[in-house]
Length: 288
Ligand SMILES: [Zn+2]
Image 1 (tube, protein in one colour):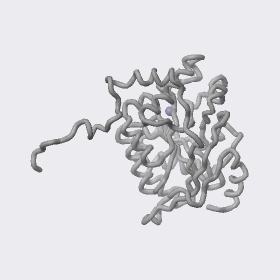
Image 2 (image 1 turned 90 degrees about the vertical axis):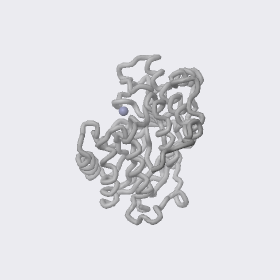
Image 3 (image 1 turned 30 degrees about the vertical axis):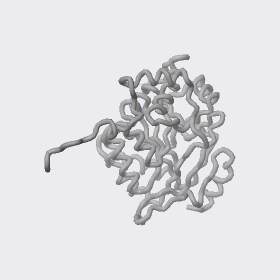
Image 4 (image 1 turned 135 degrees about the vertical axis):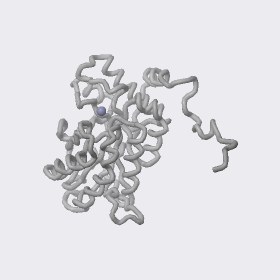
């Protein structure tokens, strides 16, 4: 879409830079794919907040524009099902993985990155930072960022989402000093309460029809969401919504203290610097 909303977006380009044109992707051979209509680059200096549910300073989406976000992964089966559905539509999303899950399933998280999605973080163990105080809260944030970096083999985006959206002001201020942007949402799918994929699709589409745009919060951790993605992307396309892909101007800088703490959580003396296929290979196999 290149209507008035496009120009409205351009007005706040100092914070959220626009990279359109060459970066706006089509989806070759798939005319019914959602694709990506706009790629934005976020300058996270000072830790800006996004998602009108909690943070109203920066509204960078025009009408009919949506951003897809997925929390709590990476998780076997479900994350890959989400990736597969997104790939069918040449769609790009932002993932907020839990540090522990990232170290349990680094290969899945690497697939998320390889597919061109943006990866932020979502604490080390999904602690409620509204209850965790002082150093404990900082540990959760920083160890989560470091764990994602170790799992990925490179620093993720300085993008963060608070578990349960519990955002004590001390931690909001801390993230500001770290220039890590905070993401709330405009549309909460409440997919974690649902077992049927069709309920996830209905929940998102009904809320979107009311608001007309927004950052959508979902969970690649959830099976119902994984199963709903193909239908949801089809519905978004059919209803005229377009996708905005968020990227970071620069990767996050992790802190050595927490890199060490996260590294100590990796099982075994050597982590995953070599792919399993180069460590263990099949040399004989029974004929099929
Ligand atoms: Zn979460």
